[in-house]
Image 1 (cartoon, rainbow, N blue to C red):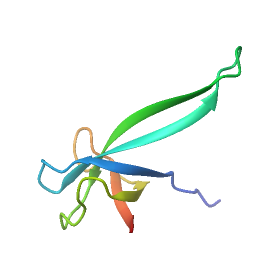
Image 2 (cartoon, rainbow, N blue to C red):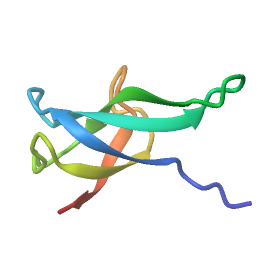
Image 3 (cartoon, rainbow, N blue to C red):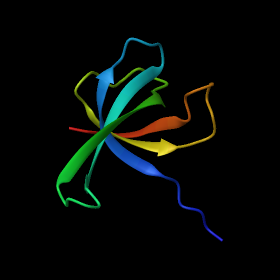
Length: 80
């Protein structure tokens, strides 16, 4: 049985930590009762081993084993 890894696409909002970036992932969904489209933002701590991303980059992240207490996502690709 093949398990697919979770992937998200988001925007880098902070690079102040060493080898870690904070990525905001925005999801949009309709409200169950009123059908208005709601956007929700969630922030993830992402492992960036080479410190190559900068604030404002659009990146792809993937779920991996825990790197630290709160960091279990890894940077996969930077979109230009």
